[in-house]
Length: 137
Image (cartoon, rainbow, N blue to C red; front, side):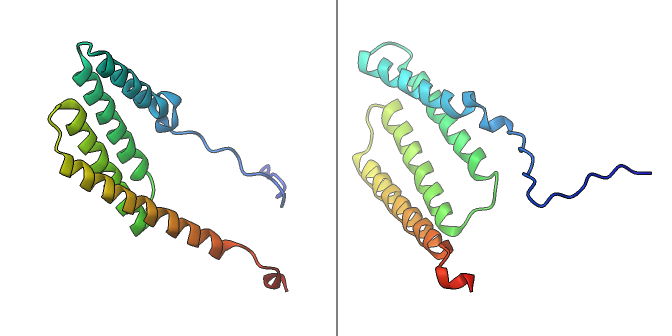
């Protein structure tokens, strides 16, 4: 005879196991390294470029891992592309001191368009999901 648990309608789903890329070292480590690199840059200490390059490479890698872990909509793709372009522009600007200002303005403009698209489309989706009182009848 098989043991079968009774089916409970109000039973909570079991907690899903966190994946390795949700670990706090993966989430906060690159940002801490970036802050340390910026402090090194302000103080003009040696090793600044290496620390900044490594930190921003880790941030870009983390962004790719999080983004491709699930399916995304078109506006999320635009936001992702603008975020990656901005991060690569910052790498170019901070690691090599002769950064191109036109490239920085373009990257910031593209990033702001991506943020606005993401904000307005997610806001529109949330407003579509709001349950109305007449839907209950």
